Length: 132
Image 1 (cartoon, rainbow, N blue to C red):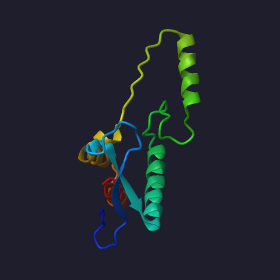
Image 2 (cartoon, one colour; image 1 turned 90 degrees about the vertical axis):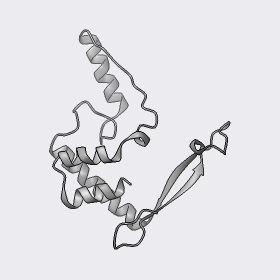
Image 3 (spheres, helix red, strand yellow; image 1 turned 135 degrees about the vertical axis):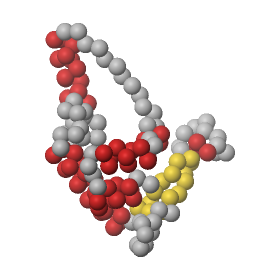
């Protein structure tokens, strides 16, 4: 159970089997956590997300060529830019599949990077709360 001090529980975590054939139910990797968040928790999470997105866009933090997890960015735009770069000359392209990348993120390291972006106060505390 994830709790914020002084408040009611905002989320409960349950574990469900992954619906894939051939996955033995006796292995831990055959299960994935699902957080069941209250309506208030969802609203608070959306507010933090919107505020963080606004801050990052205002400070031009995301790379201009980034499309993933960015409003208005899509695969077609990236493919168009790639095709133009190839037509204009020498281009090196690397495609990387980051399977289960979020599961391997070190939360403390991520929070330290967020603090280095000068994100402090209530927004930082909210991000820290929702990242657990």
